Amino acid sequence: MAIPGRSRRGFLSTVGLTTAGLTIVPRHVLGRGFQAPSDRLNIAVVGVGGRGCAVITNMVSENLVAMCDVDWGYADRGLADLDTEISKLETRIAGNYVEVRVPASARNEGAPPTITRRPMTPLERTRAIALAGRQKALVIAAPKAARHQDFRRMLDQQKDIDAVVVATPDHLHAGIAHAVMDLGKHVYVEKPLCWSVAEARHLAKRAAETKVMTQMGNQGHSLDDGRTAVEYLQAGAIGAVTEVHVWTNRPLGFWPQGVPRPAPLTTPPDKLRWNGPGITARLGAAMTGHYPMPEGLAWDLFLGPAPFVEYHPVYHPFNWRGWVDWGAGPLGDMGAHLIDHAYWALDLGFPTTVETVSTPFNGVAFPHATTTYYEFAARGPQPAVKMTWYDGGLLPPKPVEMGEEMLNPGGGTLVIGSKGKLLYETYGAKPRLLPKSLHESVGTPARTLARIPDELHEMNWVEAAKGHVPVSSPFEYAAKLTEVMLLGIVSLRAGKKLVYDGANMRVTNDDTANEFLARVPRQGWSSR
Image (cartoon, rainbow, N blue to C red):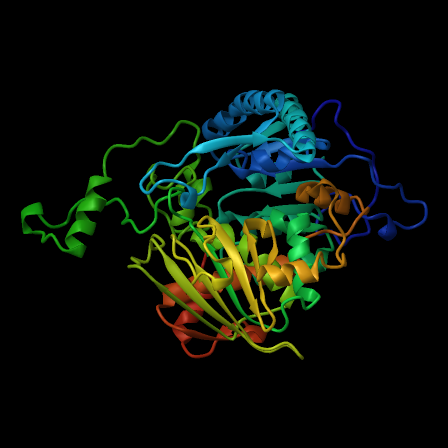
């Protein structure tokens, strides 16, 4: 449906469209006599209740013409929370403070997490005021956008859409992005880019074919600190790199993992032992009960290409991330923010071997904690690299150069080279060299990478779609990064170390493991 008062300027596109849908294209592909792009994109968002609301807040300068969600009850609660968020933000602006969580190392043993305050920096204040303004603008814009529940109908019925934001559960990303690109429309997909390795390959290929502007939502790729971390490595500040250690505390306190599916007991309780299987069966039974479908939730649309299971609140909302059918666990959630900068700087490509070890894994919910070991081949003069991923609270050995300081348990990356080490936090934040003497002698690296205005990853994509700037994290790059992350899950599911032929997207030492590179979608659905 069209939105009154929100029509766009008409123009023709020379991008290869597979339908009659129109698109905003860069000026250089418009021939003589064609009308230039309009000043504002007509944007639709699929998946409003979670990350989608935050993403479109940063694009609210554009025309929000459509919103799509399989659960409008949940999505509306998220939109309603904007008023509360605005009020809290304005309180901090008026008080000129930011809230900071006190790190565990600074608290007494056993003490609960605490929040302290510190004064805002001028930049933090400026950005807080800008964010409050964007949130207020979204409160006004959201009710004017058309509402849909099925993205297929939205794309079929609403012809005024130029670009689409995809912020659904992981297993739906590829199908929606594929449909959007087929219409010649630009697409922004939250991380991880997709659910399977095969989907990652396909999305990169389709993006190259359609030449639309694509972006994955790994926001740290556009942050100044993250780009400084890359510049340190590319300048050789720590010499030849041979090891990378990456960690996150997820899923601790964020979503459940290592749990059984809800299911009634098949063995009488008095016949069950109090061993591991017996306790697991009891836990599954304890979660059974009468949980009516939330009003307005289209469960079949939520499932999409994934196998059918009955609705349960342990799956939705948000908890889907810990279930293999729909999510990619901590690797999918945080890998794109933590692996990104070292992978980018070192141009690692595809791993030659991957091995994931974990706490007990039942095949349906990701385990409580995993460690994944990657090996990457030498690249020209750069030596081979071993990368290790830790989640669930596991940490790498602390560098001796840190002295009494502790690693940030929330997440970070440690890169080890022949001359020193580079340490940074999630999103590439606070990069610094170790030891301190090296950091001081090297100084700030030469700026070789362009900076993203206001560090707004989302608006970078908008401006790229208008033909003004290069896009920060296009599918060409994002698909490779995502494949590396997902290969850790393939090894987990296969239960062994894998030898991988990246050029041919094939595990060479276990044919059965190749089944986990893709999946056959549920009848009536496509995974791409």
